[in-house]
Length: 92
Image 1 (tube, rainbow, N blue to C red):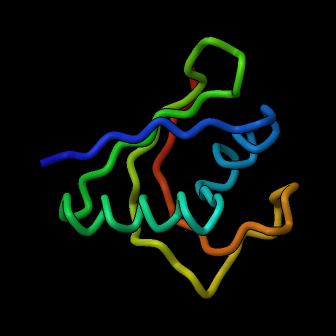
Image 2 (cartoon, rainbow, N blue to C red):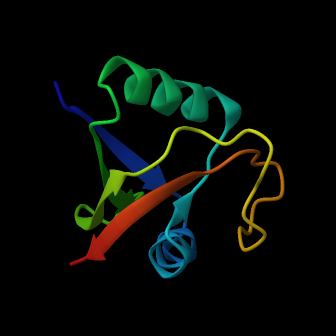
């Protein structure tokens, strides 16, 4: 059974970074939710991306890996994020 999540970002740069590098990271709380969804759905997770207050979706991805808590992509503006997931993405 596929799980679906809407991921909202404060800024469009995080979404662009995610698309360019095929990764996503967030707060530990959100990352635990994604990890739990990935496990419960046997890896079938779809992520919809939106910038807060944009009132539209700006990308969609399939979560292609479980949470990697040992690595964090270096391209993120927010340096408090830890862990990352690989994703196969497309923008709209």
